[in-house]
Image 1 (spheres, rainbow, N blue to C red):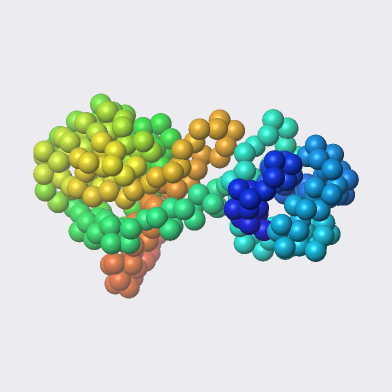
Image 2 (cartoon, rainbow, N blue to C red; image 1 turned 180 degrees about the vertical axis):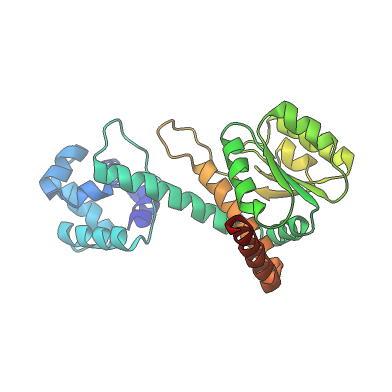
Amino acid sequence: MLQDIETAQKRMTRAERKVARVVLLSPYRVLRKSIGLLASESGVSEPTVMRFCRMLKCTGFQDFKLQLAQDLATGAHFSETPLAAQESAPDLIAKVIDSGIASLIKVRDSLPPEQVQAAIEMLAGADRIEFYGLGGSGIVAQDAQHKFFRLGVPVVAYSDPTVHSVSASLLSAGCVIVAISQSGETEDIIASAELGLEAGAQVIAITAADSPLARVSSLCLPMNSLQDEDFYAPIKSRMAHLAIIDVLAVGVALSRGPDFKMADGRRRRTRLHSVAN
């Protein structure tokens, strides 16, 4: 229903678009409104609301609310509607979480599988993995270190530009850098990626396609259309970065097969036995 409204706006009259904006802004609140209240809030007449409902192939306002409620209940569409200055708790919960889900769906549908597979193979064969990121991307890099730590490969995460530039220059063939940047234009990350390449390492960039970082990297996992321009919006790029890291970590673990899982279990049991003694 919400997607139908977004698509149908081009065919609506100016008054009908006013109704559409109110519905898209606070769909959960619309379920609690009468036709008169929705018309008043939209600044239109009740007949305009009825025309709006019929454009969406609903028999009337009650049928429209029923279809909208079914849409919201099943999660068939996750709308990225903007946050208003004052939000009720139900709308705040719905908008923040729906926005995050919509962003993850975009990432899922846009990630090139062949590049993801190539990145997994690169990481699975690495002698050492280093994650670089600044600011929010630095926090993602730390999370990545924790996920890859148990895979049996030496792994570190650096968010200090001086530290990761020095470390990158000391790498060699067999090492892999994972550079994380939303814009792909951060000079410190680009410089460290270049130093790592010069030292013989490979670089996987999780960043915007066609960005400076993507162009200097060995392999790019593109992340586009996830700009966090609204201060009050959820940090969509961070969630997308974390999801991509999860895909890579699980992919590397699976590529090592059941023997890896058994070896990991034996190592943990050995450590626990040593501590107990």
